[in-house]
Image: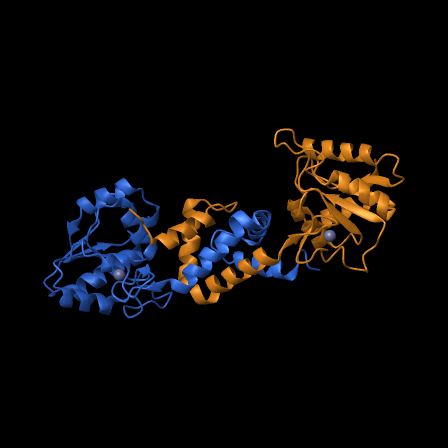
Length: 199
Length: 199
Ligand SMILES: [Zn+2]
Ligand SMILES: [Zn+2]
C-alpha cells in the first residue's frame, strides 16, 4: 500500500538518493517542502532545474560553471603561471572560501584508485600535463588530501611533471593526516598554502 | 568571495533550509547533484516542480493529494463511519504504511499549542465536528502522540465531540510515552490500533 500519492513517493525516492538523507529523512524533507510549497518547494525546484540545465564542466580546468570556461578560467585578474590541483570541485570551493589563492585551478575529479578504477586518464592528468606545457606554468601546487590515495596521486603527478620546468609544491602545514580538505576551516587552508613546500 | 557560481550558491542556500541538512551537508548534496546532473538532478527538479504545482490539501480531511479530494477520501472502498484523527500528514502516511486502518482520516495540521499560537480553528477541529455530524460518524479514533500537547488535543476533541453520538477512542497499547507516531514500526501501530480503548 502506498503511504503517499505516487508522485510524492517518486519525489521521496529521488530525495533519498542524496548523500546524508536516508528514506526516513527524505520523507521528512518532502513533507516540509509540501508544507512550504510556495515559499520553498517551487523556488527550489526552479533553481535545481536551472542549474541542471546550465551547469557544465569547464573545458580547461574541470571546475563547474555555466559556460565552456568557468568563472575562474575566464577571469583576467587571476594570476597565470600558477595552477592549484585539487581532487574535487568541493575542494576548489573550500580553497576559494579561504581566498588565499589567486591563480588558476585544475580539478582532477577524484584521486588515483585501483579499487574505483580511477587511473590517470579518468583524472584529467594528461590534460594537466598538456596545460603546464601550453601555458608555461611556473608552479603547480598539489592541494590533495593527506590520505594514501591523495599522496599516491600527488607523487604520480610530480613524476608526470618532472622535466616540465614547473616547480611542484604541496600544501604542507595544517592539513591533518587522513583529513579531507573540504572539512578544513578557511584559516587552516590559508596557513597550509603559505607554508607549502617544494616536492 | 563566492565559493561557487551564484546560481549554485542560491541552490545550496535553498537546500540548506530542508530539515536534516545544514549549510555544509547542503553543499555536499548539491555537489552530488552536479556530478549526476542527467540521472538525478534533472529528474529530481522535474518531480519537485510537478509536485509543487499539483499538490493541494484535501478539502475534506486535510491530507495532501493532487485533487480537491485526496485519494483516500475519493476511494469508495474505504469504510465510512470511522474517522482516524492524526496531527500531521506524516502520521497519516505512517498509519497507511501499517495498513491496519481502512476508514477515513482527519488531519489536524498540528496539535494545540499556546506557544505556537495553534488553537482549535488552526487545527481543523471545527471542520472535524461538522464532519462527524454530516457523515453520521460512528467512531472517531484519536491517533495522537502520547505527549502533553497530543493528549491536551485529544481531550479537547473528545469534549468537542461529546454528545455527537460518535464513540471516541484513542490508540492505546504500543504508543511510547513522549514518542512520535511517525517513528513507530508498522507492527506497533497495528497493535495500538487493535487495542484501542474508548475515552
Ligand atoms: Zn575553469
Ligand atoms: Zn481527504
